[in-house]
Length: 455
Image 1 (cartoon, one colour):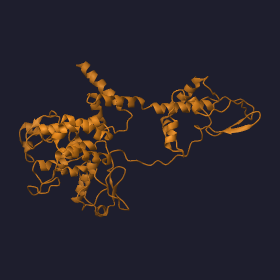
Image 2 (cartoon, helix red, strand yellow):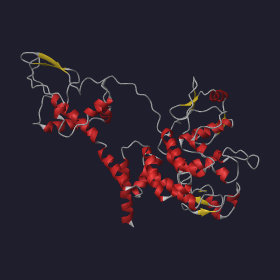
Image 3 (tube, one colour):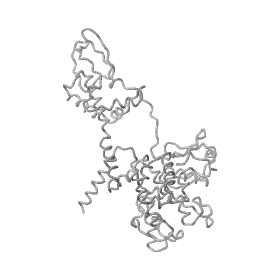
Image 4 (cartoon, helix red, strand yellow):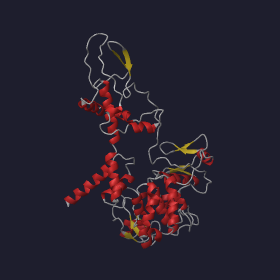
């Protein structure tokens, strides 16, 4: 048993190391990708490509550091391949600098010739460092005071150096170690997954602008659309989703084994095409074999909050949801299922997918209302499902915040608490002047914003 545990741990460590250094959040997306790699649910060609990229991700940085070390050695007057040890000594000095100085070194150079030219100059093969720099000729120097002073080979003056020879005086400036450029003001960038990409529409608008709103009456395609939107911009995902739906209009057509050969080329530009295709076809086959309905619910662990569902097994079956409050007074099984069993739990355990389905599809599937906003509810005082969801996704949060404003409330997406919508904010959203700051909070803008399309 311990051997198996150790093997599994090594698989997860390897998966984490393969993904280290890539641009992604340390959250559910990274955990999902690590689980795919660790459990072997990744095609071998995709895993080989990921491994190659992971091994080569630091090659360019090493090449630039070696170029810098060679330039330092040349500046000290040791030119030629006869003393490679000094290059390594200079390289160690570069690597031993404080992290803040090393990060400044990594910033790309700027030139009027354009970024592509400079980037091309940094891609030298091993052994080409010597030929890539202008080498000043050997010269005999003397100080004006006539006294010899010891100087560390690891520190070169940062200003232009004046050297006096027996016949002439010249001034030379190194290309790599000149005076540091004045600091450029850094433009703040919001953390990923914080600010919605859609402007806030007026409260009189028919819809907020999410792709899920278009699929609210077709739950299967909503699940597929959500898979397209994971780690992908709406500009890239939405056209690919609509093309796929036009080519495979039914779950049966998409579930066919031969569909894979067409699906992967259609979504390759989105990234992780083989993984996305496998997930989409899993949804299609599960839908054909056992479409979700109000009669059966399936347990979901760690939803809606981490740690929830501790008394159930993932995928465990439960009966239909009773009227509000009935679960608490029912059998032990119904009490265990309360809040952690959902009609699509046999198809997915992902939070983003379940949140989207609850908001846009669940009320209609259960026959509670005619649409997701609560239109045509069976009884007065009906509370739509979307009012009970606290999503983590930035677009779902923005949509629900807008829905609550239509109800006259300013909603906290983290706690679910509400307060009366201020009149100045109501006026600003009506004029298209409501935007977001870098934390994703609402701010009143001076001028109206341009509305965008669906995401």
